[in-house]
Image (cartoon, rainbow, N blue to C red):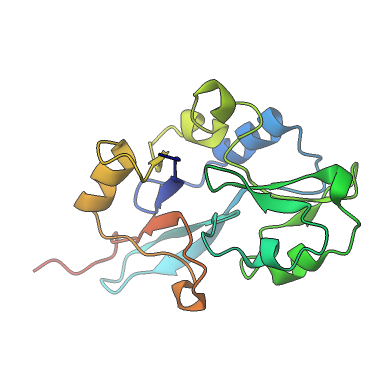
Length: 190
């Protein structure tokens, strides 16, 4: 059975340290002017009056129904056997339809190759060696969980069965495989 990779970002465990961003840049040789992954930090005042921060992971959400693939006239953007969207730079004609079609603003144009690029769960390097993506391995608080949704015994399925999660823009029907544990730091306790 093919794998169905997904990730969880736990907003309660994330501290906004950007270690994931740095590891991604290093592992994938991402030029300084662009990014595959960032954690946006937003100050919040919670219902109980405390102040804190909300952390938002900005990266590809690895849709099952991929608008970025369906618009590509040359099939340079494609989904592999594990459901990961990749880009064949040699087939890219620079139309940027995939960039425009992504409702998550997760694509960027690589200033070196001039082709669109995005997070691939480190498919080209770490995943192909049986390792987790770089961002997951460096997270000091274990805010990121990665795994195969088709494996009932995987850590990701365990966490999904134990915690409340949501997915960004689910209403679009893209079926993102990036799950988010919402922040409950300011919640009212009964």
